[in-house]
Length: 333
Ligand code: KG4
Ligand code: ZN
Image 1: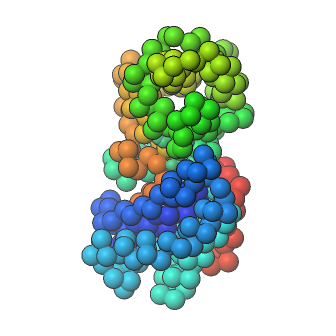
Image 2: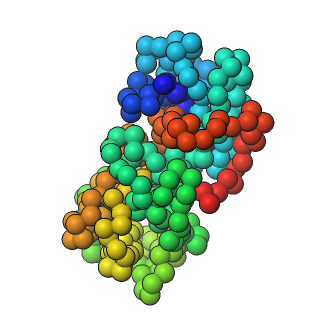
């Protein structure tokens, strides 16, 4: 079975062909970074127009890279939320139109669920598993029981960590997108140089808060006079975020029955951060729990994870109606 997955929820126009045997036949991504860089962040209307301009050629490329034609596809999966409404309408309408014209099942995909299950496309990870899902818009610690069952342990009460990476990068003048920039410059800095808060790292709550940390970085940035100061601030900020995730993971693993879970998985754009990945890996090592995260190319937004959630949904349930409406606030639970 071959599924075409289409992703347009934020600033990547992406399409991929994936089989139910976990083969990624193609995974084409057009990143709108250049369109948004001048504004130092994603502008929704610019994103929607760019999706509209690119979607046809990206889907064509996904099919040709995979070496398949329209008649070889068995179902079409499209992101229907959460995300920016303009992009969602473009991608979902394109996916539904293809499904209607080709008389194929249409699967409405929740973008966060697609990140959550992306690991199963590349590794044999059984349910239930623990998941730390950290992207530009979301920061959720949960237990994944199936593609549609999530037990939320904690989530951010304000900004997501990805958003904090982006804002810190912007205020230090390192531009957009922030995560990869901060990670790069943090390698050149001293993580102990600036004393920054580790928000909500007390008690038993698994919720997160990153907005105060961002403000603390803003205040600390006033003392930056040269590039080295900025590198030190990047390293100190990345260390603070890492310490928060390590604290929450350790706290949970101390109190839970670790044998109930197959792994601790990190997913979403921030999971591309090697420093955070390796810190969490060593926590898991202490508790003899497998740690895994998708390869970097599957951490940030892509069509393959959308197609894969399509596979998981089709295995257990019906396809969705062509009347399914894109929902910019579609919640995981
Ligand atoms: O999952 P994603 O591609 O899009 C959303 O669904 O939001 O995540 C994008 C976020 C951005 O905030 C970006 O700065 C962050 O992931 N990110 C990173 C890294 N690469 C991307 N954050 C930290 N370190 C990275 N290497
Ligand atoms: Zn995402």
